[in-house]
Image 1: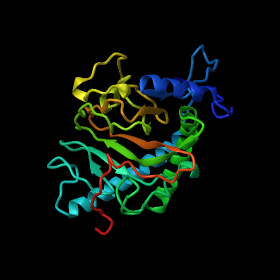
Image 2 (image 1 turned 30 degrees about the horizontal axis):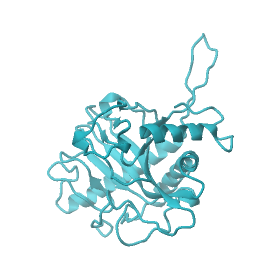
Image 3 (image 1 turned 90 degrees about the vertical axis):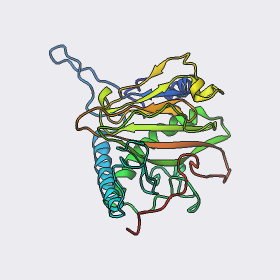
Image 4 (image 1 turned 135 degrees about the horizontal axis):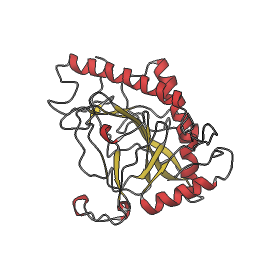
Length: 299
């Protein structure tokens, strides 16, 4: 759905109620930046900024690209192929999510709005809040700015999605990098649990060659196995622009498509929002997708 130009002006937000209804019905909703019509030789020009400002996306992309290079250097110093082609690996700072390599999950702390901040999550145990090596100060500032901007948008949808006695917090956050030559993932759910919402924000414009995320609409309400799915509502692989937002239920069947481009790495930011009862102190990370792992902090 396309957000109105004044999407951040109203409270409560009618667009957030509509987005929550679509998310509840289909298991996914794409939030697309508004367009502006300008009279210039009868042409229509798109607004130069996405829902998340492009310079914020660019700075975060640069920060996480720098971190991945440093983590790959540390991995290589251990005698392991940092691309993950020889063998997929798992560290607290970076996980290879592709058996053939070139697809990386880079967990970071959630640095956004305090209401959804995961700073009160346990510092031991499992979950993507265990990020190992600390971020560089400049990188941390860029990522915090991105998280804050994302939180402003997504919090409105979460407030409309949950009941009055429920709120949410971020159980995991990070970045997904899909390099040229990566394979398409198998169809999968992130987990069977109700009350989790995934948020994806592309940091570059998506196209079919660099591997957008494909969604099986309506599968969040299915109880059968992934391999037995029936696709009643269709398949959805939105070609989002930089700074747009994709929200989907944790249980929705999806997969990242392979990157068949020659030189373009697809980078997106993610956050996992988890529902909780207001006043509850029961807050844990995403334990299904971020198991305990060794750290590269001391390499």
